[in-house]
Length: 308
Image (cartoon, rainbow, N blue to C red; front, side, top):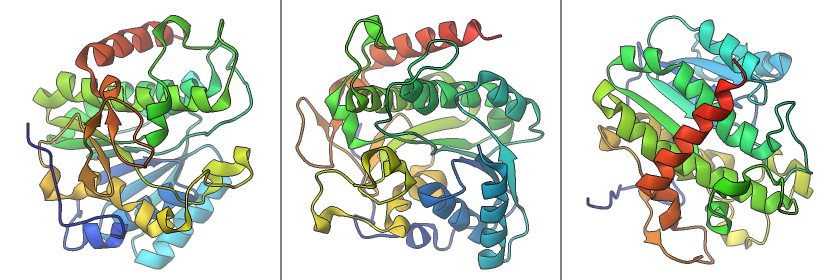
């Protein structure tokens, strides 16, 4: 399998990678779209003619974002809908309310390095929101994605996945001392593994999934670490417009037709690595391992089955 390269790179913006793409008649859902990367991703999809649903926890913030996007793009088909990824009932309600095909699902929402917290089910909060909530959403919307005939799932991960594999014997820190960065990193590895297995299972339905590292961008995601982007030099920082570029590329570019189960950064597929790179590039081998991906899918289904 050849590594996929594109004409775009670090400095490319979401608008640039979507230029010339006609999304009229196509429908998209973007989670966490009331601010930051999600809002910019939604704005660019709307600018190309897509009908966009902003799946947000705060409906008032989502409504403000929808009005801003419509004002900026002239596209009235931008709507907020409530979605709390930490609450399986909220995810089910969102999916049950969906009608018709879904062409693009952007799993963008997330939480980073939060204090130790658990859902009522006993799930560690970052794993619950970043992985399980999105897993439940995608599987519940499988029929709508298949109905589209050629659908894409875009999964926002992070280079932090290089800090931890999915620790199957202790997903929720029942035995390990909780560390916010380890928990975040495990959830970001889970994001990549989901893309691998979703593509394997659903490619025959015309559905592909890819994961990505957006880059270092100052957004609300950093609220638990004082707004910092971590130990990143100024020349590695991206604007929100640049940070959304890889998400939009995976969502709409014809270069990604029938391409799935891969990990991208700076608008290009990343090299598989066997140790931490010390940079924002590279995908850990354990994060694209097919056996790990199958195991995570099975474990995730089992966890969610207890909520029904």
